[in-house]
Image 1 (cartoon, helix red, strand yellow):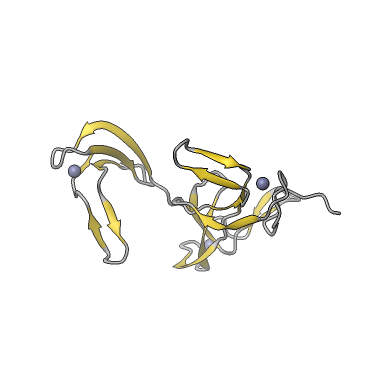
Image 2 (cartoon, rainbow, N blue to C red; image 1 turned 60 degrees about the vertical axis):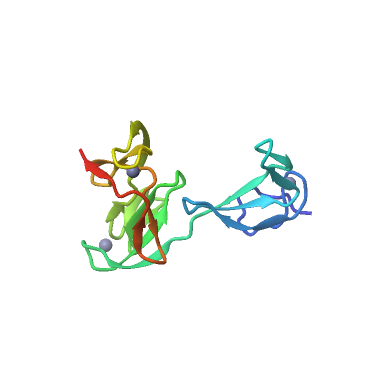
Length: 163
Ligand SMILES: [Zn+2]
Ligand SMILES: [Zn+2]
Ligand SMILES: [Zn+2]
């Protein structure tokens, strides 16, 4: 019998308890994971009943419909193991033996950050959040603001204040 490896993404069996692993679940931040089927989320105790093993899957890079401003090759969307998203050139890579970047080194970070603020929205009274864009610009916006992907329009409160 083989020794189970924790980092194998094709793994079907929980290394902790030997039960089957569940379906792939995608979190709101785009990370993929599989939970042990012997574990169940208990909404009352806010804890997992049974086995709490989680297998995190690597983010699969997606080829984008955008070209690299440096060399014109296509860009790919990828994610670091810390959950930061970035666009990088598809010709770029990492030579592990020489420890250096090979090909095109174009990289563009694409996550802005959101921090909750202890301030109320002057328009609706909900809490405000501080949003920092990738380029470092800061703005306050209403925490109820969202984006309806189907209707392609903003939802919630539209209050925005650039700092
Ligand atoms: Zn398990
Ligand atoms: Zn490039
Ligand atoms: Zn508001």
